[in-house]
Image (cartoon, rainbow over all chains, first blue to last red; front, side, top):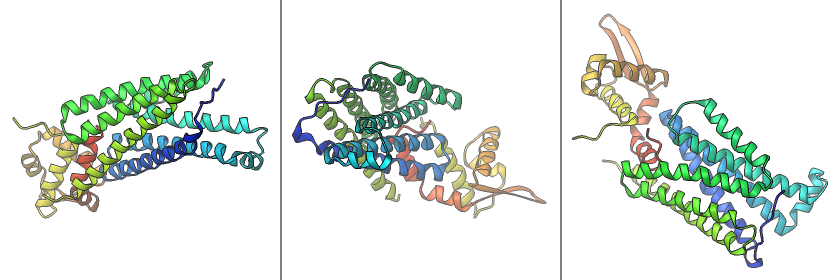
Length: 225
Length: 92
């Protein structure tokens, strides 16, 4: 069963813009991570790149689906793709969003485990997807599982900050903490309007911090000794 | 006490040593200049050849190593690489 959120009218469209922004920031981070991988051949950079690429795809899908609902574009899409009903199209969109975000979190969590074991990576992904697929409340299960992944990710960035106390490492730690809080808020957003809005704002803070960090890196990276 | 170098920094040090010698240097010089044990140096050199950061040449005096375009690019962009990997926790 998939539950839909209760969203206040004034927030219609704003959530679309937020999700589009998250998608763009994630895509930029992903591209720079792949650039680092190309320069250094470092596996962690490749995994990080793929994680944020999956996040980006997930947010693009979410943004498009929400836009389609508001603009009633989904009726035309439904006809074009020969879907039986709009509900089927919306469900597919939600599942696609869940799939890609889970892939992103699973890959990022695997990266933080500091191991080079592809079987472990595939095991994490398979368990995650089947856990959500066979649960009664898929949305709730998705956000619950995402929160678990994010706890591991936050602990990795906490240790990273302790090893390397700089503004940039602190920014990234705080960004992922906000992402975790946003995710927890989404768990309760099905029944409470305010949580949906709060969750988006918490994610906005998170991705803003990530973007600021990236800009600081680009600025410092260009400085010569 | 100096902070322990991470892998990216060790690679930078090796490439810098090779580059500083006008592109051709013997293994023992690399080992002393980059402050590595012989075994560690061999492992790194093998990896750097596989990843096309350096080239190995053999002549009557033995093996020498020279830096490639990819290796030079790594050196030039090292600050950016280190900043990115440090802040996003990718350096392990």
